[in-house]
Image 1 (cartoon, rainbow over the protein chains, first blue to last red):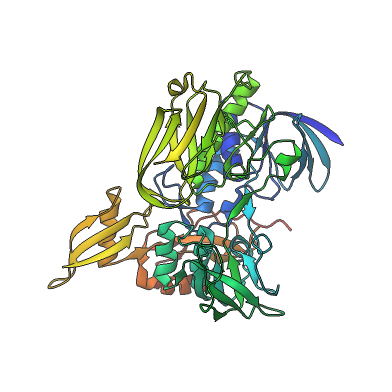
Image 2: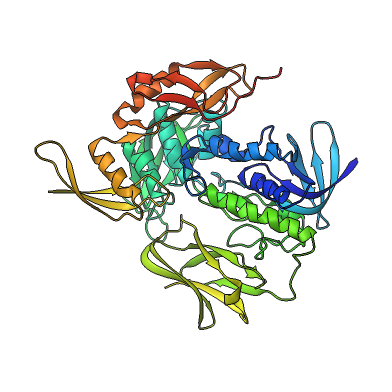
Length: 413
Length: 127
């Protein structure tokens, strides 16, 4: 086995990995390597051909491929090294990576590692869908890959389970490609995707969205023939008497995303149950010194613009770690989610630098404020007109506000 | 006077707008729009009430490329009621690799005045 050395090694060539590698290079590291399992850079944005990306970052509504091409162009113009069609088999706690390409197996000794592997979709198995297992059941992203990258149409009469953004975007896409999308069913009493997608992907094409409704049985032997749906009560039990049969040949699932953290676990890094990603500090460093995490492998984002911003910071922090400027502090200030808050990130901070607190709320509400407190002392407060679990909230916090702080508690009040 | 609730689609905020308008005499006159967080909201709402437009996104078949499809979009929004006419033109089209981002693949489909442009680079397949 061949052994090579690199200062910063980035795992994954999607929007997070690209931005991290670019930032590492621009912050003075001349020896950055990016490892990508696909044969082209860009990650999931290659198949996200709809528009709406880059509104925050570029003030333009770009499609996914256009957005990511800007980063690929910058990556290439900086002359950053990459290994494509190469999969990372494992990472250890001493920052050794074992990578496999078609030709060889290589060990890479990394000065710093940036984990940016992204996330994957929750499947039928993961949500215990009742009924048979015929052909015709896809995650929305798998259908998106077939239709947008491989030119394979997946069905004619479609039911979508879950109101995630990808599901709604695929409802529109399949309608434009000539399929009939019967309906979108969401088990929760509120949609999980963005309001604009309900308008432009569903209402525009008269596709109904049924809330507090779910598929309670799948029918069909060889191929899906239909589903039974029913109203769902607040204990997530089907309401008897509300069952109805919807004929269809295809079911798309848009029921959530899970950070892809097998490599992270393998490196002995603790995973936070609230985010399903690594626990990190305010430099996005995991529990293993020199291993950083960013993008959807750290926590699932709703906007790629935020992924890019987060990853750019992480690229910079990885270089500052190599320069000896970033170390594990003697003690951390913990940040805890309280009333109305599903998760916070980072979970702990050094108090030595400004940081952006990312968080999600548990339920939709209006005209509330997110409070960050140290005991009874106000550290930060952000007033919001509309709060929704689908929309990540970000609060900038200055290090001066953290002096003497023991623990920060974040709540919706 | 009529009122209509609308979801702004300009950005991910998805503001819930309420538009008040008169719809008598010389066409629709918007009198008030509320609920927007930015100035793009009222502009969009007025457009949506008078003549709604959308950017059409799809893909066009490519011969000899490293992918069988190139993703495309209209270079300007088209009237909403013409989306399926534009789709017909997109489905009938075919191009050859290489393709560069921004390249015009179909000129003025369905007489819309917009062009269909590539949104992805496609290289020639090396066999």
